[in-house]
Length: 355
Ligand code: ATP
Ligand code: MG
Image (tube, rainbow, N blue to C red; front, side, top):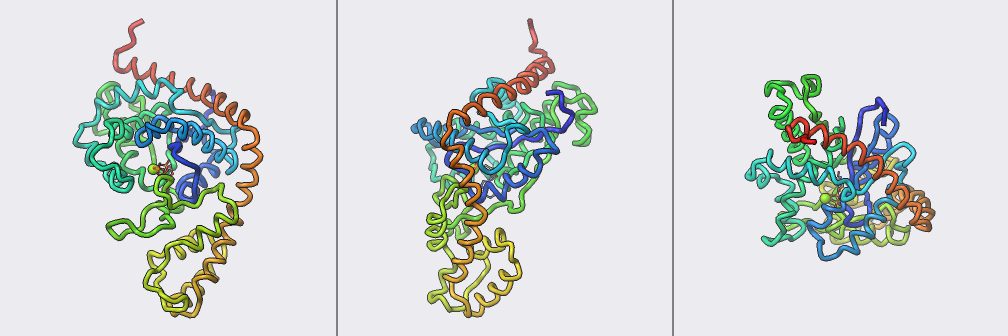
């Protein structure tokens, strides 16, 4: 814990397994930054209860699944800390204090909250805790006082709120002047850094399904049944790519088609290392001189090449869930040291350090 490296925090909700959206949105960056930063990866199990409080067994399984995915894709417990949110009491305590620093209408204007209510069909009956989760996320982050947070685009509003809470806390309780530049808050005596967002190569990878009610392609998401998982076997990948939404106006395989807003080409552009082929094939697709199947076969090969080594490594960890739990337990112990320190400092700043 005496490391001088700056900290990085990010994580995932255990509502399923990791998918390609996670890979290009955040996980690639996590792997690349493991040496430069002290990395903290949170499995946000309390947040999974916002939409599936009736399925605790699924959440439990998913915690193990996500941790196994982490190890399979190359998050390294020797260099990074992997931990479970609900086992860090300081996060829950900070959530309560932070919730006082966010005006209620501000929370309701959060566009990610609105999108999630719509895309996850939450209707009007979502629990109060659903609205609380972005505040909880502020605490997940600030408990570790990180410098950067690598996430996908949907997290930008939550990160903006994190920055607002940090400024406000520093101004109210640490006496930092409100005209201070973001990067100077710590120097001026603030407790919480104004965190930086690090977006991935794809800010928002689309799913493999048809567009949502507004005509826009939906984001690839564990909850929307439109994901290719980093643990899918080659047959599953092939089946998913074959059934992938492409251009509905292209009735015959050889009709001219559009490559715009077409997941087939979005995926080729994102994952195919042979971009020369992609450019030429896109041209032929627009002219109707190449069939869907040929392009899909090519994509299957590309995705199997990316995913299969991860799946092979995953199978080794799957056989030893005890080892995965041990990684989580050790990570959680280390994470608690940092979060507890933050809580003590926060209470001191708020003059609630009595004994
Ligand atoms: P859920 O459907 O339960 O919300 P999710 O698939 O959206 O799950 P999260 O756990 O909410 O996954 O997100 C974890 C991280 O992965 C976040 O940083 C998020 O921005 C990023 N992410 C998730 N999906 C995508 C995507 N399709 N493209 C880019 N980044 C993504
Ligand atoms: Mg999400």
